[in-house]
Image (cartoon, rainbow over the protein chains, first blue to last red):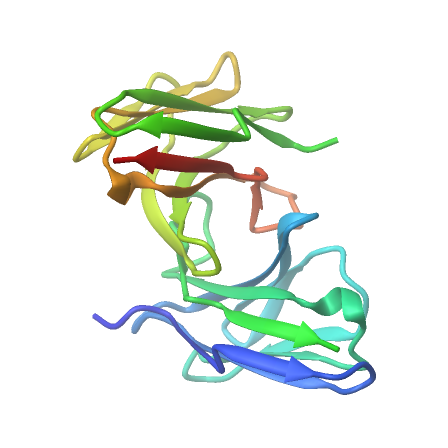
Length: 114
Length: 113
């Protein structure tokens, strides 16, 4: 089975712009979660989608949003980019959303905001 | 304060040496995950521990969960350069938690040949 794929792998944007990142989960997985990883804060949970509905949301401003499509693919959007949004954005998928459902991560999208 | 504390923060060992990484939680553990990350890349799932006292092994890596201490340890036997990377522990928050998983800051392992 193919793993989690994320596109693009690298992105450079300027402050004030917006960006959309894409994630394709492992076939059959219905839950997709997004995380932001920075050297200072480590890995932080952004949100989780299951059956096209946002189920959980981390402590991030409203500039960060996402959605999930009927085929479980997910996108996240960041509007009005700030320098501090530079990070590695990781997507993870799992079969369901119950406790102790193993999450499998994609390679990430590295975003640099200038 | 960090919910999951990992120690040590970094480690440099000579190839062939054994080592242990610890992950201590300030809250009840419902499930503990270990992942490995090469710099700037995604996380590779190593193993998940669900119950106190549980121990799992994969190749030369063994992880244990001590529910009473709310702690997990990851032990690498006869380390190799391929073991180098960042080891992250993650924990389920359980019912009512708003986050899918919370993670420690990671432990950077360097293995010198």
